[in-house]
Length: 528
Image (cartoon, rainbow, N blue to C red; front, side):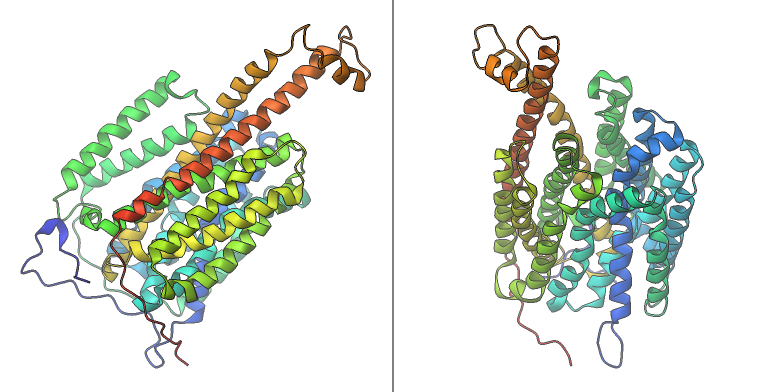
C-alpha cells in the first residue's frame, strides 16, 4: 500500500514526520495489559455516561423543581461541550502531549462527575455537566489512538475488538445500569460510579503510557473558532430542535444558519491550509472518508434504536426502569462475543468489507421483526431480535474501523480518531432527533386514521365495550376508546420507526464500494 500524501498534496521533498514511540514493552515487545485495560476503562467512562444519565433524568425533575424543557439542558450542556472539544483532540495532544492530555481528561472528568453527584440546583448541575463534556471529549479518541499505537498493524483487529467492547457495549448496558442504580439507590449514584472507574484507569495508565515530545505548533485561532461555532451549533440544533418545534423556533433557525455558514467557511478556508486546526488532508483518504460516513449513518440507527427502546418498553408496555434495562443485556452479550471473534479470527480470514456488509445485514434482520411487534410482545420476543442485531454490531465495528484507519499514519491517529468519534456522535444525535420527531408525527397520523373508523356504523365497537362492562352511552366509553386508540397508534408509530432504522442500516452498504480493498492480514501467532 502506497504511503499517504502530505497535507494538501504539498508534501514532495518534505521528510515524513518521525513515528511516535511504540507503546509495547521494549524487552518483550508485548503490549502492557494494564495500559490496554486503562484505555478501555477510559473509553467506557465517556461513552457510558452518555446513556446512563438519560434514565436518571425523570428523577432529577423533582429534585431540582425543573420543567421538562429546563431539565434537557443537563443533556444538552454535556453533548455540545463534548462535541466542540472532541475534534480538537489531535491539536491538544500535540500541544500538551498525549500523556498529559489523558491524565488531565481522566482527572477532570472524574472530579466533574463527583460534582455532578453533589449538585444542589439545576444551574450547578448544568455547569458541572459542561465540565464533564469538556474533559470527557478527548477520552474516546485518545483511547482509540493509544490502543492502535500499542499494537502492530497486523494485530489492529484484536486491538479494535478490545476497544469495541467499551464503545459498542457500554451504551447498550448504560440504561440497564442506570435503571438499577436509580431504582435501588439514587440518581446521584449514576455520577458517583464514575469515580472508582476513573481512579483505577488513571492509576493503571500512569506507569505505562510513555511521554511524547511536545510540538511547538502555531494555533490556528480562526479555524478553531469556526470549528467550535459549527460543531456547537449543529449539536445544539439537533438536541433542542424537537423541544423547540424545529424551524418554527427562531433560535433553531439562527442556529442552523450559523451551522451552515461556519461549516462552509471552515472547509473552504482550511482545505489546502497545512496548519489548519484539523488536518483536512485526512479527508483525501478514500477509506477514511467512507468509513467515517458509514459510522455516522450507523450512529443514526444504533442511537435511534437505543432512544426509542426505553420509550417502547416503559411507557407503552409498562415495564419498570430496571426490568426495561435488562432487555439490552442479551444484545450486549452477543455483541461482545462477536467483537472478540471478529477481531481475533474473522478479520484475518475474510475481506473486511464483506464482514462489514454482513454486520449491516444482520443488524437490519434483527430490526425488521420489531416492525411487527404488538402490545402483547413478551420479554424474549423483544430480546431475541436484539441478539441478532448484537451479532451484527460486533461484525460491523472492528472491520470498519480497521479499513478506515488502514492508511492513516501513526502520528495522525489522535487527530483522525477525534474526527471519527465526533461523526459517530453527530450520527447519534441525528438518530435521536429524527426518531423523536418521527414518533410524534407517525403517532398523530395513525391516531387520526384509527379515529376515522369510530362511527355509529362500526359494529365492532359494541362488543369491545361490552367486554369492559360499558355501552356506547356510558360516560366512560369515549375516554376508554380514545385511550386504546392512542396506545394502538403509538404501537404503529414504533413499528414505522423500526422499519426506518432497518432501512437506514441497509442504506450504508453502498458506501462499502467506495473503499479500497484492504491488504490481506496474515494469521500472526501471539508472542509467547
